[in-house]
Image 1 (tube, rainbow, N blue to C red):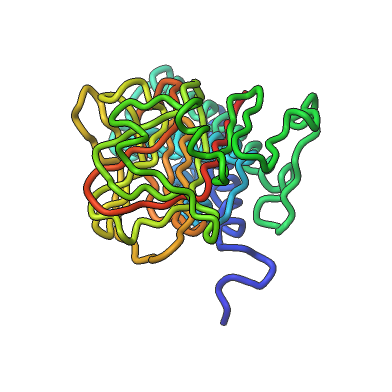
Image 2: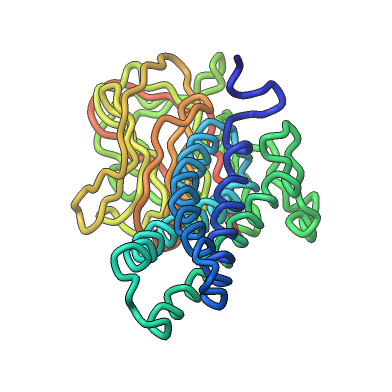
Length: 353
């Protein structure tokens, strides 16, 4: 028997309705039981539903996270996914704590006076608000964006006011008003990197840059400690780069939310390991790390939205970490070690206006 039917992208859509129904019923039965004391089964049923509802909420949260980690999410949808995930986590922790407290009162402290129990029961109504927000944001993903249906829809409100001139075109270096920018390797890329980018460590000349027409790529032949950024500030961002690090004996960092050389976030690749990290006052904190095995030209991507950080290789998510929301910052690249490095593209997309 097939657990997930063909129409469903994953099991999450079939799970989410259980905590919604069970927890709403739990709150309502518990509330009604305050006034109909002779029907004590109402309170008992409510307590049981709290337990079952919280268990299914845990399952829904975990399957939802797995679903988002395995979907190719377009940049314009990422903030909505983050909002849904944040509301889901708030709802989950509320009912975990609330259910423990309510079950404790209902089972071991039955003799408490009604006036003391009432505030605890009424607090459950707050949980319904959290459930509503979680469900509303989830419905927006499916019916507003078509996420998981194979049809991603951009809302009119999100594209309103964007003209053809604002859109990123396929020239060497282009920017747009929301802070997004795109760099494509062509014969003029060395000049662009020299004049348009800020070199935080090292210099362009020290890397012996050469444009390879056959590969349509920029090659750095003498890798030393080097770091460059495009000096603008972006809050939530998706950064994609097409690179080849087969001949790099050292580390590569796709830098984002750069403040200065001692304070920035990055997706790092080194010795077959990929990591999501933050450098704060010179100290490095790793949010999440894993191994990867891709060789040759690879497309890497880092997404930073709110407290969520995701790292992809060839459009497959490898790492998903969480941390404090960073301050707006710049995007760029850091190289260290020896050998050579090649790049075809850096595409930076601002996720929020």
